[in-house]
Length: 288
Image (cartoon, helix red, strand yellow):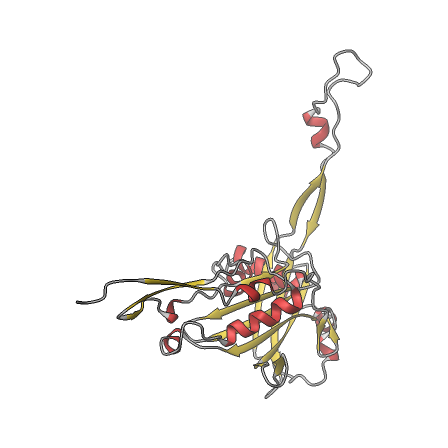
C-alpha cells in the first residue's frame, strides 16, 4: 500500500531575520571612502582618467504645486459667510516650486581590483567591482555640448557595489533553507539601515510527500528593496541618498546602489525624455 499522506512543515527560520532592522532608523550614507556626495570628480585622485561608461539625458524643468492661499468668496464679517474659496483669486495665489531640468551627464569609474567587504572577516560578503558615479547638470542650449566649466559641475552622486550570488540554476541543487549571498547582503542592509520601503519577509511553506519535497528552491523570490525612494512622480529622493538592493536571478549578479537626488533626476530624465524603459529608472522604481 502506497503512502499518500502529506505533511505540512512551516519553515519559520526567517522570523528573526524579518525583525532585523525593525527598530533601526534610516540614516542615508554620506558618501564613500572618505568622499562626500557633491565632491568634484577632480578630487578623486585614485580613479582612472577614462570612465567605464557615460550616459546623457535632458528634460524640462519640473513644476511642482506645493500650496495655495484661499481667498474667501464672502467676507467673514458678513452674515451667511462661507468657507468656499474664490476660484480665480485663489488660482492666482498658487505657490509653485521648480525642480530639475537641463542637461544631465552620468559617468562611471572603477579602480581595477578594488572591492569592499560588507560584514566581518568570517561571514562577510565581498562586493566587487565598486563603481563610482558622477553627475553633471546644467541649463542652456543642450545642442552646444558641455559648458567650459564642466569640471566644476561634475559631482559625486552615487555608488554601485556588485556581488555574485547563487543563480536559479545553482539553487536547484541546494536545500530550500540555504542562505544565499543575496540573503546575507539583505540582512546586513537591514541591520545598518532598518527596514526598506514596503518590507515584508515571510516564512516558507514546504509540502513534504513520500516522493520528496514539492517546494523548488529555484522558485525563491528575490525582491528589489529600496530605502528612502522618491515619492509622488519619482523625480528625486528626499534623503541625501537612497539605497537599493536587487538581484538578477538568472545570472546571480546582485547590486547595491547608493543614489543621490541628482542621480534620481538623471534616471527620471532618461525615462521621460527619450529613453523609455531605462534600466536605472526601472530599478529605482521597481515594485517587486
